[in-house]
Length: 224
Image 1 (cartoon, rainbow, N blue to C red):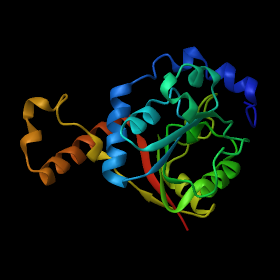
Image 2 (image 1 turned 45 degrees about the vertical axis):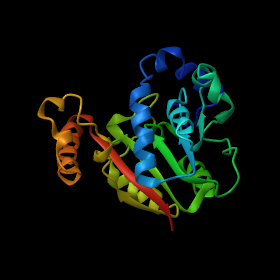
Image 3 (image 1 turned 120 degrees about the vertical axis):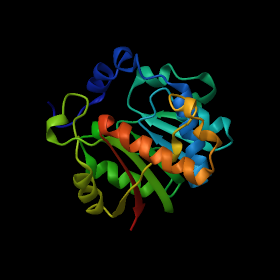
Image 4 (image 1 turned 60 degrees about the vertical axis):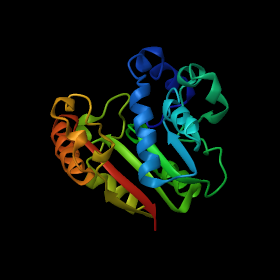
């Protein structure tokens, strides 16, 4: 495995085959709603945005959102209405095409494990995040054994915490259980009629149960 991927590597690896099963608009719409409910942002950046489905969802909800990704295929196959909001960026070497302190919220959903040069990435993240902004990461909670041609930098949460704290961030665990819907597989129990406080308890239990299989790490970064 190379120490760092150049553009040829990115286009070879992150092609139509890689993205063939990754389009899930309803999931991204709900994630957009949750980001608004939880963080109330005016500006959002989606790192590793793929087709830009979260970017579209947020813009449709009147949030100024942008996306960056290294794949020509993904960006070229995005919805025409948001193509001006998406930018091709090699996260190992290309500066993010935004001014300092632009974003209230930065999302990195299953993308940070694809990055070789975490020093460069962390500096760009720190530069473009507002002083009171947050960055929300979802990533497989896997160590060295999870690494492969695409997931080149998998880590356990404890490792990520150390990695980002050494790079001028505060790191806290974050449970996104409130994002879950109670109408799907759980719909037959009609939990959605319960008081919201009880709904959130059910959601946390359901999320923790499902995450035993997903084994994801979810955490928030803020600037020191």
